[in-house]
Amino acid sequence: MTGLEISFYLFAAGAVLSAIGVISAKNPIYSALSLVVTLFSLAGIFVLLRADFLAILQIFTYAGAILVLFIFIIMLLNLQPDELEETGYGLLGKVLLGLGSLAVFASLVFVVSRTQWTAATLPPDFGSITSVGKRMFSVYVVPFEIAGLLLTVALVGAVVLAKRRLGDPER
Amino acid sequence: MITLNHYLVLASALFIIGFAGVVLRRNMLIILMSIELMLNAVNVSLVGFSRIYADLDGQVSAFFIIVLAAAEAAVGLAIVVLVFRRKGSVQSTELRELKDAVDAP
Image 1 (cartoon, each protein chain N blue to C red):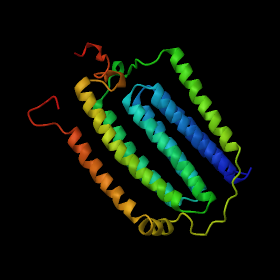
Image 2 (image 1 turned 120 degrees about the horizontal axis):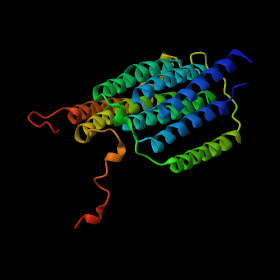
Image 3 (image 1 turned 30 degrees about the horizontal axis):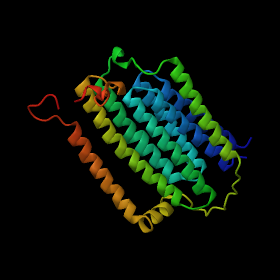
Image 4 (image 1 turned 180 degrees about the horizontal axis):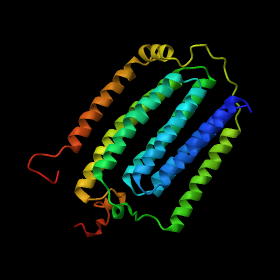
C-alpha cells in the first residue's frame, strides 16, 4: 500500500464511522463532537484531492464557525435527559428505513462502479488560493457577491427570528 | 490505486448516512447536523470531479456550498431556538398544528 492509499482509507474510515456516530448518538453534544471528526477527516480527503484551499476553508468555516454555533445552541437550550427521549418510529419502521437507505446506497455504488474515469494531469498550482481565487473573482464574481448577500440575509434573519421582543416573553 | 470511484463511494456512504439521520431521528438539532453531512458528501464528489477533469469549477462550487451551509445552519438553529421557546422541546414530532384537519370547519 502506498502512503496515498493508507491516508485515503484512514480518512474515509474516520469520516464514515464518525458520521454513523453523528446520527446514532442520543445526546446532541456527542453528535456535534462526532461531526467535528467527520469534518476534519473530510478536510484530509480534500488535501488528497489537491484542494488545499478548500481543506483550510473546511476547517475554518465548518469546524471553526458552524460547529461552534451548534455547540453554543446545544448548551443554551440545556436539554434535560427526559427531553432527549425520542418518540419516533417503532423498531419495524427503523429497520425498513435502514434497509431502504442501504438499497439506495447499493444502487449508487453499482452506478459508480460501472464507470471509469481517467485523471487529467494537473497544473502545479492546482487548488491553491491563487488559482481558486482567480477563478472565483473572474468567472464567478457575480455568484460570489450573491453569496455575500445570502450571508447578510441569513445573519439578519437569524437575529430577527431568535431575539426576544420586549414585553412579550412568548416570542 | 485510489481512483475517483473510491471518492464517489465515500460520498455516497456519507450522503446515505445523512439521509438516514434525517428520516430516523426526531431531534431537530441532529436532523440539522445530518443535513450538514449530506452537504459535505456533495462537496466530496464535486472536489473529486474537479480533480479528475483538472477544472477548478468544482472547487468553487464546493466553496459556495460551504457558504450555503453556514447560512442554513444560522437560520435553522434560530428556528430550533424559537420552537424550543414555544414548545419546550426540540422534537420534530411536537410540530403538528397542521395535522388532524378533520376538526376544521
